[in-house]
Length: 387
Ligand SMILES: Nc1nc2c(ncn2[C@@H]2O[C@H](COP(=O)(O)OP(=O)(O)OP(=O)(O)O)[C@@H](O)[C@H]2O)c(=O)[nH]1
Image (cartoon, rainbow, N blue to C red; front, side, top):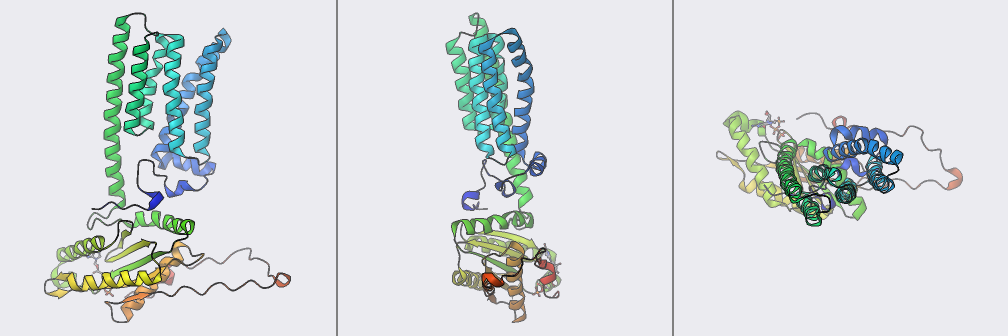
């Protein structure tokens, strides 16, 4: 299946999940320790390094080893900065780069100052780099660490020590590379399983709930319209009853394939549940939303078959209105879809934009703001009675 992206929110190793895009408070950060892999790894690696380094720093202070004390202090300061940065909701990618660069440079400098005992920190840096950085960057950093220490040679008493470091450090980096590769592969597979419907390959409801706030945020930030269509196959119960559940499944798969092929790379297609799907179309205004929805309806009516029967779809669509939230937007598109059903099915209904909010009264008569603003009704309670 084609991979879709949402502009700046493209799925990539550096993806910032929507729930971490807003400033995170301490409570949010505690939650992220359980839910955000990159955040948890960086926090663990940074904290463990700080605990490991602190006793040495105190020892060097007590022993008057000022240069080594200064180096340890700089390393600890950089790691502390990175941890505070992500704890307060800052970029994980930038903080990871800072920790990896600090560890890499630190182990080289400590190796040159302290000799072989200092070189042992190189193993920490080699493993840490593969946990923190993208594989190519980690490989480059590892080659630089190993290469510099071997070529410089000042940390080793003889050739044998140098050769042993070269072999053991390369083996360590090789293992770290293999581990990072396997872990990355499995993570991508898990992410894909968690966010796709196994039958149709469309994104699932969980992905939809995660991405709709992103779509709203992106539309407001870029000042571009965004459309949403609810697509519900008509008389699907009859297809199951007449042809069997397996035939019904095949119709769902064919339908999803047809929509995915007909839509753009930046559009997002979700299975909302059963025979109901949701399509999000960034950059699409009300007129274009009608055109796309009509095109999809006509394509389904023309191409989708079960046995000798035509399968049709009813589509309700709405563009995002100013100030609207996910629930309100979905509810308007859902209500439009029910209108399409009531009008006889195999129809498209595009919802009108809600009436703009009334102008506030002149300042002298301005009413007190409500202390408990009215909540919009939940989508379920706005839904017309079941079919
Ligand atoms: N084969 C198959 N059927 C499913 C799946 N999920 C839900 N269904 C069936 O989809 C049918 C939906 O029926 P209804 O909600 O009555 O809707 P409908 O028959 O399409 O009628 P309208 O939407 O009013 O046109 C039910 O019979 C469900 O069992 C699925 O994954 N595979």
